[in-house]
Amino acid sequence: MESNSAEAPPPTASDVLFQHTPLDLHRKQMRLLRITQNNSSEIKCELENFTYDVSGKQGTPPYWALSYVWGAESPICHITINGKPYPIRPNLYNFLRERRLQSDDNYIWIDQICINQRSVDERNHQVSLMSEIYRNANGVIIWLGKRDEEAELGLRCFQEFQNPYYCDLSEFLHLPAGTTAGKANIGKWVFLDGGPKLKEKVIRSINVIFRNPFWTRLWIVQEVLLGRTVFVQQGSLWFHLDAMSRFERMGFRCDGLIASPEVAFTARGHTAAWYRQRDLKWMISEFCEFGCQDPRDKVYGLVGVVECGTTVPVDYGKSAEEVFIDVIIAFLHMWKTESQEPDKVRKELKHDVQTLYRLVVNMIPDKVERYFEKNDQDHFRFRLEKLDEWWRATERGKNDDRK
Image (cartoon, rainbow, N blue to C red; front, side, top):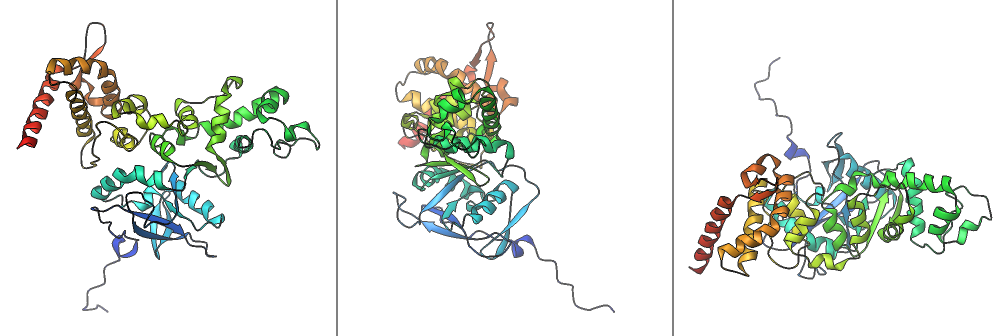
């Protein structure tokens, strides 16, 4: 029998899925996630909006910040936030599942959840505040992913490096009871007294850790430099990043160890306060070859660390090419603070061509020839007509500011 009434439409995603409560983008606001403890097989969480003052210590509860790889988009996993389902990627789901097992109800900041990724305005607002978010957190958790048996020996070795002069290797190296390894200097024992087979086994496991895609991320620069304390976790095993720093310092003993520049920086960087005193030009030159999915983050992933000199405003409404032009304009303003003479600015440019070339190659490789050309010595130089174009634009901006 036909019905005269219209059939009700199926529910849309907006009716079913969790929707973020908007942030006040004119204030310093952020969201924090907390896993609620229960016996359900689901991962149930609460997400709350908080307003904080300049110091970041008023208006927000203690929280941790997560540093991780977003990873594969599928299969989509669902958690429950404020009573409604919310889709996340598998790597983050594995972290939250492990976090729940620790019976830890502390708040945590996770960009994939705490930022409404569908809102460009909110992404701009939150990325601009990200340096404060990481700096004011109790600490940073580096998540390497779910348990990996091949990495466990290396993880436990790093755990022991947290107290390198008094540690017990007997259990996880399956040594006989009463071995002298129990209270010895771990570096000396593993890499000298333990013999070549043990050394090879440990290094092979550590190389598995070092090959983790996490270490290729550009965002680790900001997250590691700004964290008060940094822990590394894979599965249920974790260690303080200081342990990796100790290990990295004795790398000359470790033939066969494959540590990328990113790994070496992460091991040392969090103890080097002078990094935070570098300008944008230096940071781009040093780190623009680190990896990120969004080419605009070759710049935006570094501006939060820059504490001096000219910077670039975060605007995800711009294309990668427009962000590169913003960097050029920032460089021009920096040079013009020292000289009003176009010829001297061009001379300064010669010192920075390599930095700009590396940046454009990493952001918009299909448009390199638009900004650079080769000379007879196969060296690149900036197209001066482009510089003149931007020079005139900055002069117009300067005049507009005077009106």
